[in-house]
Length: 209
Image (cartoon, rainbow, N blue to C red; front, side):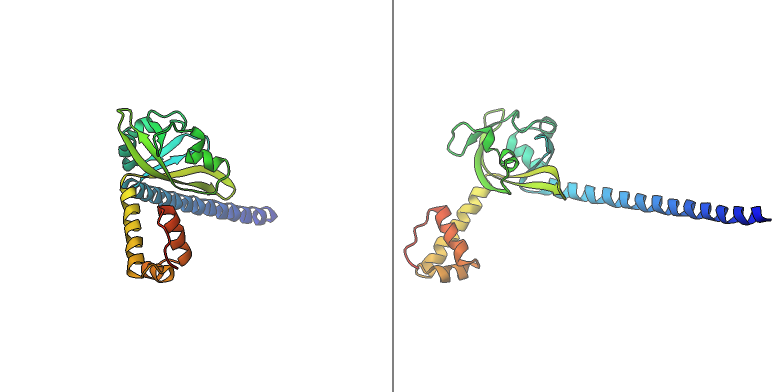
C-alpha cells in the first residue's frame, strides 16, 4: 500500500511536467510563427523603401539589400549578397571624382567608433560605367552589447533635389522675414540653431539677425 502511495504522486508529477513541456512547445511554435510573420512583413517594408538599403554583417559582408539598392548600384542582388564591402563589382569615387578611400566607407567609419554617419556624399559607378551621386547614411545594429552589423542607407539622385528644395525654402523664409533668423526659423518650423546649421551647410550668407 505504501508503494502505491509513492507511485501515484510520481505519475501525477510526470503528467504535469509532460503537460508543461507541451505548453511550452506550443508557445514556442506560436512565437516562431509570429516571428516569421514579422520577418516577412519587415522584408516587405525594406523592399518597398524608395531609398537603397544594405545590411552589412560584423565581418563586413553584405547580408541583405533591396530593389532600390540594386538599381543604384547597377548590380543584381545575387552579386551583392556575400560580397565584402571592400571588394565589390562596382566602383566608388568621392563627390568631386577623386579616388575613393575604403577607410572613408560608412562601415569603416562606424567600425572606428563613429556613432552614426549622416549624408556622406560619394559617387557610385556601375560595372557599365554609369556614375550616380548619392548620400550615404549608416547606423550600427546591436542587440544589447552584441554587434549585429551595420545598416547603410543610400539615397539616390533624388536626395540632391530634396536638399535643393530645402535650400530654396530657407532662402524664401529669409526673404519673407527680412533676413531675421528667429522669424525665418519659426516660419520653417525649426529651431534657430538648426537654421544656422543649415545656412552654413548650404553656404548661405547671413545678412541679418
